Image 1 (cartoon, rainbow, N blue to C red):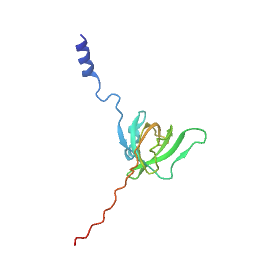
Image 2: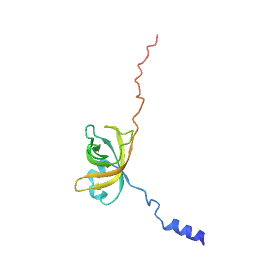
Image 3: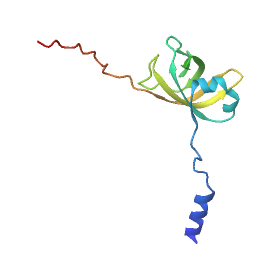
Image 4: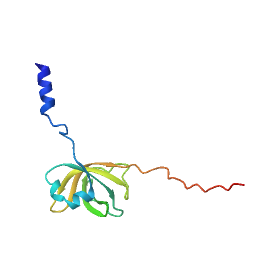
Length: 126
């Protein structure tokens, strides 16, 4: 009986139940109605000079962009150590479509590279 119940659960449960859609900021800006009333992940680059913090708490405001499309963010949490302006982030949040603002409490920031690729000068053969 337990085996039948387990098989029925696997057949009728959604395989992507609990999986959030992952999109780039330009898609949200182009089709905001597709993202209203649901949580999703959005990827973009933090616009340099856009970061500000509320004076009384850990709420941050900044802008992300992808392919020239910009999206405002209200982030209500501590910034990750790897967060840098100009860097890549993935935010989990919801869209306030009237204000075109992502409201988020979860962020992953790409770790900036510690090593830049050096250009190697060609050597002369003698």
